[in-house]
Image (tube, rainbow, N blue to C red; front, top):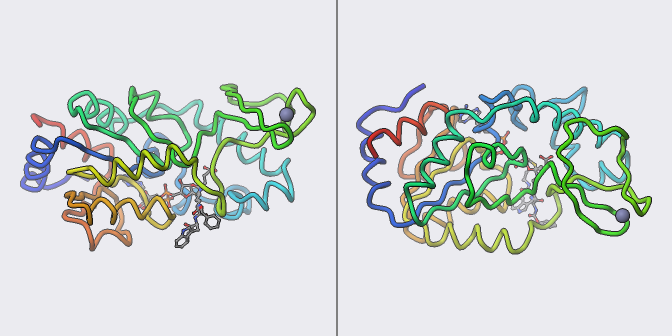
Length: 245
Ligand code: BJW
Ligand code: ZN
């Protein structure tokens, strides 16, 4: 699904004029890399809804089950490749000095595509944090030898992600808010805009005066609020925006 050329041209003009650009991405940008979204088809693992697993309660109840889910996702992500949407955002970062990528995704595909100015507001699936001693490390192995894994102190680590009911990493969230507040243009890509506080960044940017453009294959709660809402896939629309921008 492409975007109509007249709208694309208008957004290219906004892009050229904007001294600062913020992009908010969600699971939809990685869907075409083969990573299931949370709420769409494939949002189910075994018989569990992703939303029921992504909670501290689910981890406390059954760390083994929680780790099986994360191990399955890590293995899937490890074989996935960044798609044209991820690559286009990395290219946009090279072109726009005041660029910030705010991602809700924990998969690391933006990094692998070459993006550097990233605020990962929901953490990173490749990070582990011990629930006993608090130490944190990175483990890039797609499949962990022992589930649940163990920390050197004997405690059970958890994935370094943000679950429902938990606060977002403070410094990262502060930077994301600042980027949204100062953006002259915001792109909202592949997110259902249902999860807060992330979804609130869209309204924050708009109230602060940014033009806001949504790219999503389906309608979302912010579709009616933004300046332009495109029913388009990220891997087609984002490269299209960069053409002679
Ligand atoms: C395509 C496409 C293609 C497909 N191209 N598009 C205010 C109001 C109401 C509730 C709250 C509120 N403030 C806080 C809350 C509570 C809660 C919340 O938001 N609940 C709502 C569900 C109602 N929020 C929290 O608890 C947050 N913490 C917090 O607020 O702390 C303060 C606090 C403390 C104590 C009590 C209360 C507050 C934390 C939220 C953490 C979210 N964590 C997860 C899991 C991360 C770890 C993991 O990966 O396992 O983050 S949940 C999950 O949802 C994940 C995602 O980042 C997040 C957003 O999902 P996303 O990315 O939008 O994916 P989907 O699947 O929903 O949508 C995909 C979209 O792509 C769709 O629209 C498709 O159409 C589209 N698409 N293919 C373009 N090719
Ligand atoms: Zn430990």
